[in-house]
Length: 48
Image 1 (cartoon, rainbow, N blue to C red):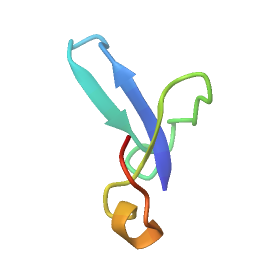
Image 2: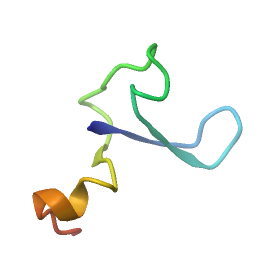
Image 3: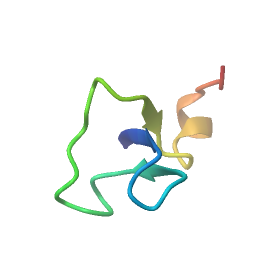
């Protein structure tokens, strides 16, 4: 699963937004994209 990392927001701070948590969320390719932490080791993704 992929989602967006949103900096700031109405409550301040940053948040990770995934569609499975809220069906109204849409992937925004203009924002930073993240992979669900549970899939990182399975997919062999390395952090930069």
